[in-house]
Length: 232
View 1 (cartoon, helix red, strand yellow):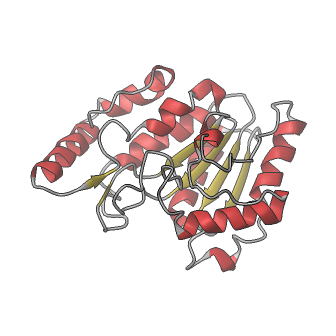
View 2 (cartoon, rainbow, N blue to C red; view 1 turned 30 degrees about the vertical axis):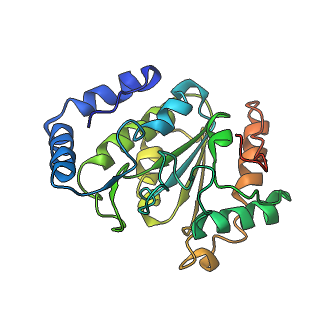
């Protein structure tokens, strides 16, 4: 795992990255790429969520499962795609809930960087995936690293919101509970995928709930609006 760890996250992540398991993950990823397999997102973008959202700035953590596995989609932020890439079905459903919840119309793009720059940590449980093979890197060692990132946020005294979408993300709930004393808000719902969104994701109102909590705790609301042109 060759990507540089952003400075604000080093104390939390470097002990985990020094373990044999993390070194094994790095070696395995190199071997996969050397064997000609396409791995998304590309090197240099795998810790981008941590780059854009320093630990001290985190207000909300939105946890997904793993990166998008189509060409050009994954750019290091859960559920987000670069400008010019078609909005994936899960993100389209997130936009539907955003409009229903807080009245914001969906933009034409899928770039969520504007959220990340406001303190919304857009993190997946696994940070890489093989092309066209969902969950193909699950269980390979990323979970310990993302557990450490979640624990770093949950271990602070600063009230934060954890939005856990889907069963993979909800496995982190016990990590959060073990490190907090009621300081945080944990919101759980089914994944926004078309396969599960109608089982309770729609109508879950995560955006308004998050902002109500943040405002009540004096942390300030997130502006969930996204620039229509996609400039972030």
